[in-house]
Amino acid sequence: MKVLIGLLIVGLIVALVVILPERDDRPSEATVKEAVLAHIGGLTPPISPNLPLPDQWVEEVEVIEYGEAYTAQTSEGKRTVWPIMVYLIADQHKELKQVDLYRDESRQWQVLLIQDTN
Image (cartoon, rainbow, N blue to C red; front, side, top):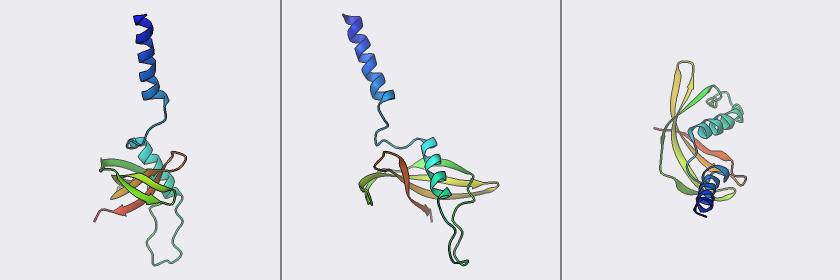
């Protein structure tokens, strides 16, 4: 009987940690990189030649630091947003940016905002 209870407890722990989808905890580094690159790939060049080009030159994203999560109103309602400091990298060029990520209705991580750190 003790073995059965032990197995049930282990099974419950495995289900909570491994099987259940990720909760609204902070996104992993791999998730941040994927979301940022997907967002940047979806940007279109500016109409005016006087405007700066979007960050489509980015080849790699390096996560530097996670900030404190906050709640923001998005088009899908209130969401928990994670501000994350990252480097956007290509060749020898590197730019420090703050990226704000949130989960959309389908629980996918989306970029709310990419901004300079100045």
